Length: 135
Image (cartoon, rainbow, N blue to C red):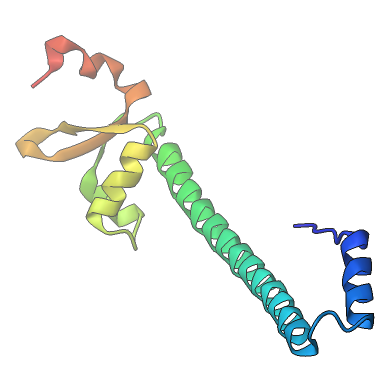
């Protein structure tokens, strides 16, 4: 935020002070107000920068989780993985949080044997998503 001060305004204020047209108490109050605005602006900017750094770190973690999930679900041997296996591999995530990350990375859920919850990437399971295979 770059602010410029009008030199004509500064000259007029200086002349008014020199001629005693402005009460020194009013002038002091105006200076105090300008200083407080300046300090508040700096504080707001610092808070903003802190929030941006925090959000950037959070989004990096989210992106890393989703990238790891995609890599795990792209392993050729298994087009689908059980939710239990995913929970074992991605410890530290609550079950619903893990499901949210799975959906964000492009995975969908299927029912396996004995109604086991399976997850797989849409791109690898497109044939199972056709209308003929719907539940």
